Image (cartoon, rainbow, N blue to C red; front, side):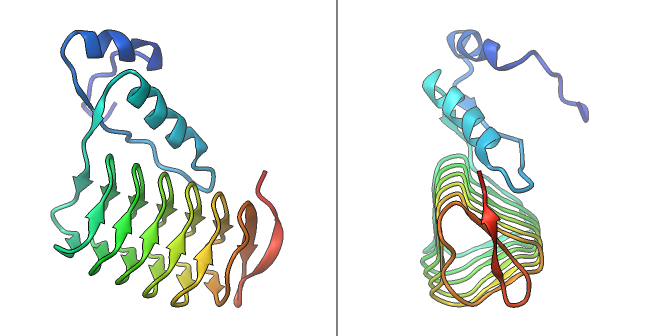
Length: 173
């Protein structure tokens, strides 16, 4: 696939580890459901793999930012001072994670999304394409912020919000 040999499916993980492969990287993104990516991460972790973190050379990551295991930071993304990215989190192309933000494990900040200072994004949450989140807002675990939304207040875990300003649409699952 794209010039990279595909050896098989997840069932090969233990055999690969036993043959000396010790590092893994989850190359699966997400549209709004981050659970498939989380499942892959947890399967590889259970097989004993350590995780590589990938930061594109055209990304900007502050020296005071903290990146968990298996994080992906794409081209043009900015992760500013004292921001913390959890394990297996994605900061996609041209997204901004401002100072003192916390992005939980398996969360996805999509292309062009903007998190103002002090935003908290819960585990497994998805902040959609071009969304903007006001400073100090909390996005609950498993929540989905729709593309282009402007989030002015906290988002309850397990819900979907969208619009300008963002409003509750439904539960996620």
